[in-house]
Image (cartoon, rainbow, N blue to C red; front, top):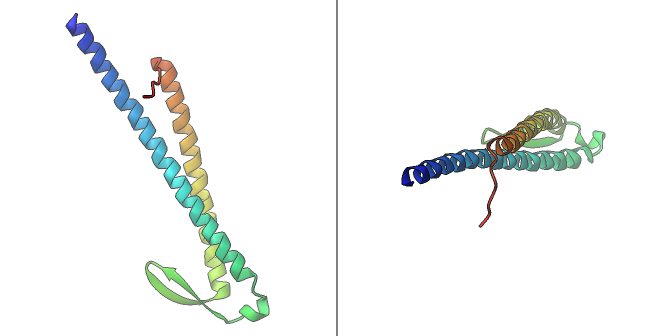
Length: 122
């Protein structure tokens, strides 16, 4: 009897480890998605602030952009172009991460069903 119990316990441990891997991956993807969303919001705020300056007032006006830890002097129009490019890249990244997140959540659900796992919370 003890060998049957040991086998069941071993299976439980393996299932728990697999479940934990899924959960950790999902949490990591959710964290990445939230971080990118915050960066998107920051870009939108800066873009809104800079575009609120009238075009005649921002002509040749200095603006500074942090690039790779170095403060670079640009014009407002140059920074707006950079911001828009970065914003598009961030939105694409977020879309890709959100797709991956959905795929992994679906995989977890299918895994739970296929293994007939019952989640017990303490």
